[in-house]
Image (cartoon, rainbow, N blue to C red; front, side):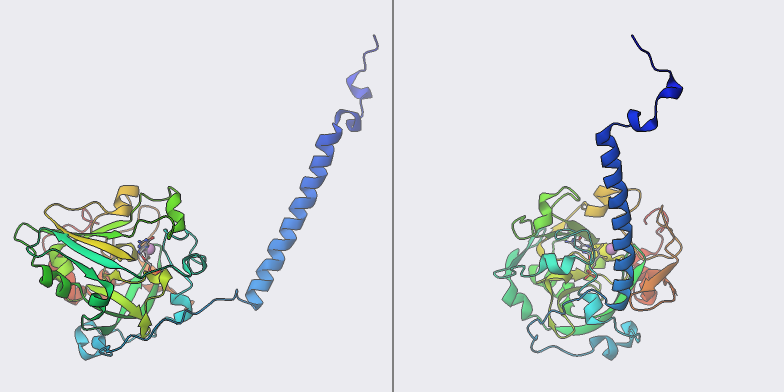
Length: 325
Ligand SMILES: Nc1nc2c(c(=O)[nH]1)N[C@H]1C(S)=C(S)[C@@H](COP(=O)(O)O)O[C@H]1N2
Ligand SMILES: [Mo]
């Protein structure tokens, strides 16, 4: 038997033909990918991806600039563009990619729609959307700051949640308010995945829920709420991180105990029940001291309670906000 010595064997003989060809293909593929990435980068810089600005229905009878009329919560900062507000969204029911929510949520059917207000109340009631739209609608410019470090200034249209809660008469046992988003994977396609426990749920203490800054929003920029921003009705709690402002709400329950909340269930050491905007309490993986206002280049310093300290700090008197993050 002829045995070749190692030094006699050429590398081309050892290299299996298939492996060799595959490697060539791989190298070619990688080169191509790099070119595409570089081209894509240049392309995007010159031609930002086409974004669609939704045309909602005009909301009638809106009291304009309620935030200006009441200087205690006026925000005299440049509004974020409608284009950014409607093309950079967190709405995991449609996509975990902020730039893809708009296209995935396009055509989301929001009629018929009702919100059940129930639990520890004297007069539980299912409100049809049209009934909710009859509540005095006001325009309010609020900051919204995401826990991820970006923020926007949004001209919301809505009404104080307290107006709705007053109608159902919470009992003395009611101490918290629990909110729930629609559960319907046929209409919210990303609900077939397990990225979060569905339905998305949130909660507030009753006094937070009754605070005049807490609104149910039904529109923005003068029109009905675009699907990607939580159509047809979503909560807005301007002094808390954005994830507390639950979208596409179908159920509001008055309860005695602190209710579970989606992000707290998901990652309890990163997201607490209170989630007040607080530059002094870092997220375990990043600082909360500054934020990027979408559309600006410099970073802004984040304000305590997102700038609403004068209105809401008293709600937390005597509480350790490092423990209750
Ligand atoms: N149902 C539901 N509500 C939600 C979310 C979500 O994924 N699902 N994301 C939250 C988060 S993390 C943020 S920052 C805000 C974003 O609101 P916007 O897209 O209107 O700016 O919505 C909040 N409400
Ligand atoms: Mo967020």
